[in-house]
Every structure is written in C-alpha cells, then in structure tokens.
Length: 93
Image (cartoon, rainbow, N blue to C red):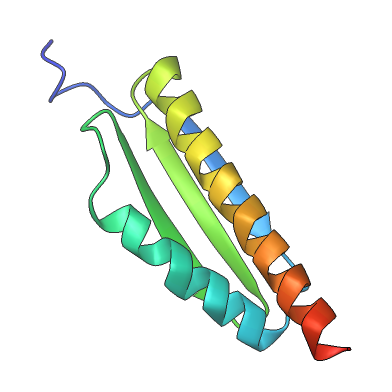
C-alpha cells in the first residue's frame, strides 16, 4: 500500500473552552492559516470556530508527523495565550 493510500490513523482534538468571543475569533484567525498548507502530506488539520471556543483536529499517518503537528499547534496556542495575557496586563495599567 502506498503512502497516499494509507489512512490517517492518529487523531487529536484540542478544544479551548470559555474564551471570550473576541479571543476565540482572534485565536481562530491566527491559527487557521496554519491548516491551509501542512508541512507534510503525512498529517492534516482543521480548525473550527464556535462562539466561545475553538477546536483543532489533527489527523496523522504516523507517530512522528502526529507529534510534530501536535507540538506545533500546542506551541502556537501557548504563544497566543502569552500574547493575550501581555496585552491584558497593559490594558489594566
């Protein structure tokens, strides 16, 4: 079976709940471009936007690409949280 015929057999679903509507939209708009052109044909991802949450779904064909994609999205989310916290601290000053 060639790699193109192989099914995606690993899946992660990351859901961020209890976000303000503006934060959820900002996270969605920041992360969505990353889902358009994956760095590898071995994994794919999509992001869903809901009023106060976002959901990221990652499908991969193997553990290496799964771990790489998952780590990339988790680092991106972490960075967005830090940016939001920094902006909020300046707003309250």
